Image (cartoon, rainbow, N blue to C red):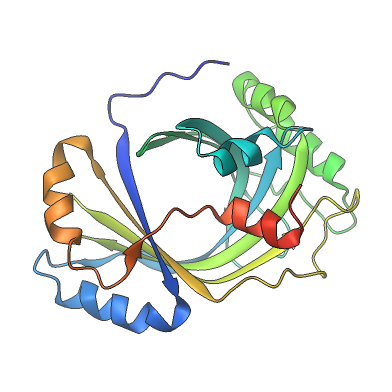
Length: 230
């Protein structure tokens, strides 16, 4: 299915560093002249990624294709398996990113549910469009989670998130969710800046002094590579 880029699309820039740099990043944000403040309480982010049978989303990202999409189910909090959340189609075109979201109000997972059962429970709660994407990306591949901090500049134009304590589990090994065989992910933080296209110059000026480097980063690709790739 063809996706049109919306008018309110945002630009995204990622920075990656060792987790030991977290204190320095938080200090940089606290002292920044844009007056960054906590925009939302810190929380645990959980995702299960779905891909095609030939791992098209993984391959497109690895190849650096400018226009690409991936499908994930996201929920928040300490639940081991998927709780109430959102099926998200994450779209990327160069540095522009946007999402299509399909809300799921009832937890699609209970202990002893297979991934096929989880997908069925998702499908009955979302729109026809969401079901089409779930059919196009039918293979559960990776479960990951991390802790996220949210910051917003005083003028509301620049949003920054800081992710740390990443963990992941390969889901390609069986029909049941894997919560026990944890991947050996590196201890890294991912800082992501988001802003409207008209604020590109403002963002460029104010991100210049960030004490870590810009880095191309996909938690999905990193997780599958560490799990053994495709």
